[in-house]
Image 1: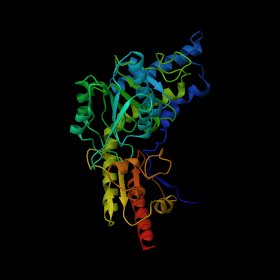
Image 2: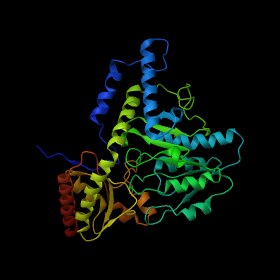
Image 3: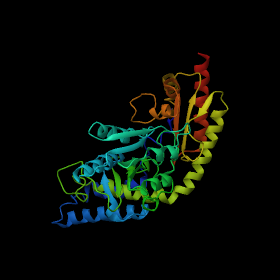
Image 4: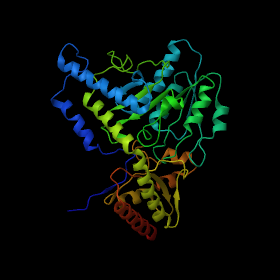
Length: 382
């Protein structure tokens, strides 16, 4: 029997924690009622479970329960935030038509904003520095009287760098500009209290923090108005039509509690393992770390390797270690994030993203480093 593949792609997705699976179990078949069916006891029980989960999520993230809007994940949350805000501005007769984001954002932010730019809005995609971090002076210079929104992710999904969210929020708040933050890779991994930081809209995804796939949250600050993107019901304060998935909502709440509980200890342990992995890889000639050394996620390492073909490297590793060359949503194309840092397409194609997780062990790190070293040496000889 073949040895199991070492999974180091936790930024693509994480395993659902067993406690989360247990918390969801009764709501699949025993307590299966629709939470909108409040004319009977099973429906009321389901509705109560949803509201209890909402309260727990709100408490964990330091927001009122009214701020929590359930979605199918961060992609839907991003679309609701970005397109919903733009459409609400149009409906209110407002004059702000300018949107700002970073060239290194996830496609779930770039694509909705580019869609809006084809429908009457002006979009500025700011370049990032070679570190992956935004130049705050350049951002400030890009702000205009008609700027409606700035969107910047808290933690990059490929290179793990942490943007100066508090400083960005301050620049926006001083000018009455709404600030949206894609925090899919950040919530449960770094300290993040959106209300205290001044974030107006924050997107969360369950499967990035050891919860189930298919569930997420958009946090909406008081006074922010959005146009719904899904029509057909009045669920979620009229912002998101559709029957609420009670098991997934319960699972998300439990996953967030567990992630917040072990966040500091997990980050300390994984940072040490990540640094050991970098030490091993850096011993190979021609290995370059992508993005700033700090601040970055403790469980992320992204490198590009000279003298190898990216596709061949991936094929050489796939039977031993599960890593990626970039976002799981990139359709196999060289990373636009790495190219935004200044890498060529060829260099970006020769990149590896290592995402460590709650279950990653020191022996797995050593074995993964051995596998990469052997593959690189073989490919360079060839």
